[in-house]
Length: 25
Image 1: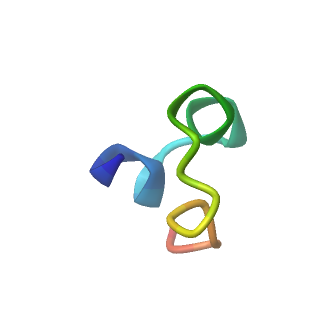
Image 2 (image 1 turned 90 degrees about the horizontal axis):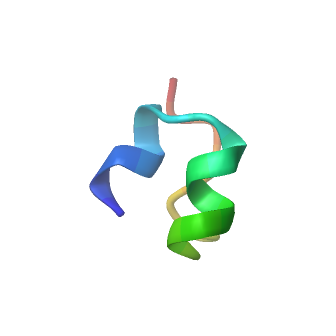
């Protein structure tokens, strides 16, 4: 999700945003 960009890896796992989970912090 869009939140994955500034969220923790946990959000990415639930959201499945593998591509978005890259360190965009």
